[in-house]
Length: 119
Image 1 (tube, rainbow, N blue to C red):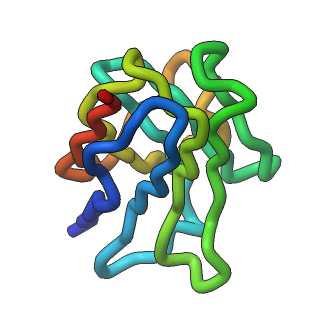
Image 2 (image 1 turned 180 degrees about the vertical axis):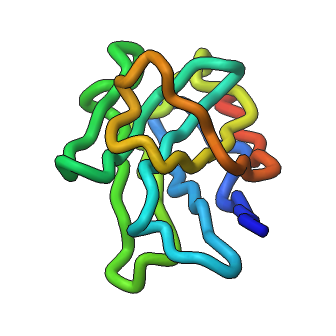
């Protein structure tokens, strides 16, 4: 059974930073394309093959997605946070090679972590 745990959310002031984690239990993330979502919008993903990264226009240049060397965690580093970034963020995994495939299906989801950007 694929299990994902999301963590790292919280309350931050505008302009601040947070790092979200997507940690796998019982499997290795290096075998999957991993995507980050908020409120139904895919904001970032790290593809399986080729190992490219994709970002939505709304967060491009501010967020960075990365895999850890152990293959167990994918991070979403968020900088210059804005109030409109407030949302529940969840990760998901797929065996599809790239997240841009319009037929992509996700095999597991994390429980989500709340990010609130407010002064």
